[in-house]
Length: 378
Image (tube, rainbow, N blue to C red; front, side):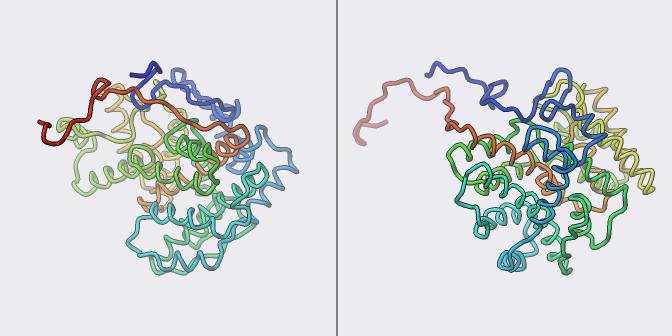
């Protein structure tokens, strides 16, 4: 019975001020610090984009060189943390491992109890490097392979693929993953970023806020959609069905086809535009045409029948698969990118903090109700 404005899921509610990311859902615009995502996708790198998100401007050559040096220098995980990863059951899901590992990494961070701006930036360097490392290390350990040492000469995207596969990645593979990391780097107050800001607003530490963000990202309605898309494509391959007929049957049985529609965008998700192109290019280069061709057929059908556009998850599924990445790593790779945005929002929250404490519209029994003795209750 409050007088506050309410909306289910907080849809359309402005919860805070931010200078990091701007979205125009009607026009299909996504911009980081005022720069359109299409410009960044064509011209930028993950490292440069991360600098932009954290600092509010593009770096000059010296600033970019120093940023790259700091990020490469942060590719270190304490030996005790490595022992923890070695003792994780190889049946554990990578997102579970990542969630727990990020929390435990706080034990070994020298700035853990310091929430100053500079300390938060130093922690952000470490976590940006360490999240990618944890995923690659665990994936190799669960497969009985020896972890690969980080290569400080490689870019963030290339180093992740190197540590994951034990082979220096091709230029195409590096470019593709780097583009995906740029596209996923931030997206305003999505569920995981909002969770991170709520935690940071209590003046909790960066590791706690990122752990909470990972917990939110783990949910299939946020970070797990691209896994569902790829499992759908695998099932089409297994059953030998026509992809459009397969999807028709799903819809006829009131089942959801993941990877379509968005809470904010009323037109095409601008990130999907670039991932579609990368999926097509990879399919032609690798000869794995079916993943792109089937995806495109499904997209055209859903768009014609349901008037829904593909979102960022739809083509990231086939893109990651053609890079040789296991399906259960798709959501962790989302975190490899989104840590850049999470860190930017946590830093911004701590720099100008106010506890985030919304209200709920009360829908319970009318006040006042009264307590009655147990022998007089119905």
